Image (tube, rainbow, N blue to C red):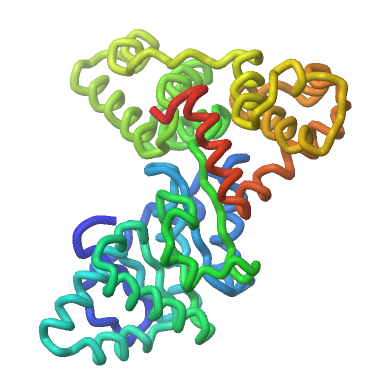
Length: 348
């Protein structure tokens, strides 16, 4: 969200200007895949009133955090909640303006009349320590008062220290990580965007576009829009030739050996030991990470991954299904896995 963008639900309004929300950023328009389904479910549950406590969505830029925040706003507004959705930076600027006008008490009183507060990019609150502390205390009081709070950040919670005041680590908060989209999700996003643009893209071409652009959903959608515009202006078909001319080459796909080696190194192990038949408690988590990455980055089926690690498919299924939830609640592990992925494929 940029500028003084702010979205209001029911009255009374908070002490800041507002504009309507983007109508296309709804839950229905959000493309769900393996990597973002937990965050999607958490946001929809919050919007429906099925969960309480603060919701924190974190992940790199362009993976859909703001989209989910806007969709949550729409869901809460439909239920009649008094809800404000704004950039965290705008909240600080409004508070500073209220201070200069000696209206800080009125500012918090008017904001406190709402039922829900949704803040985008809370990492931007870093800087002015007294102001940051005041906001953190206010948000803590907001949560303790039983009101709804949802925030997004591009950093794990433990890298935004003030979140500890209003995002408790005792399980009361719902923390969800949105990583860069996997190949299957990127293809689905390309297809959905093509439908919106009225394009009939062959499956092979959708896959080519998805392979060439990794990391950001926003960049992927923007690239397809650009390709569509260029095709129309030039009178050329949107085909492989145009895609190869406009988009950068696909980054190299990591090999099985490199995924295993990078994972092993991140946990202080050798690749030979990670893939060996031996057991040991210190091997369980690294193996699960390696299995998950092999499935996520290469799309390998469970039986094939099982053979690589001398394990059965049930073990692989357990690893691939259970790891996302572990990443959502373990910020240190999430950071380690993110660093492995960045070394393997980057974030472009």
